Length: 103
Image (tube, rainbow, N blue to C red):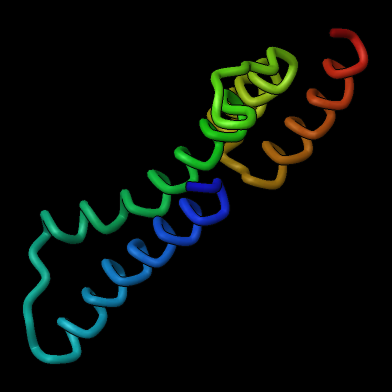
């Protein structure tokens, strides 16, 4: 199965899970706090899977690009410090640009 097909299937399943919650609430179904916590984790889980796939898999085989891995760690650390996606994005972009030239 190609990466695009996997991405589309997982994205569709995620959409169904989140859409089910919206429809259920519209029909009067009470969403429990446990379900709410679970649904909040769907987005980060999908993004983490996409990031891990792009960092560690190339043509279906394990192949780590260490410059990109280090840049991802730097971007994550900047997000932990400033709690800003914009700052994290710029930090990661600069880090991957510099580290790709150095490694």
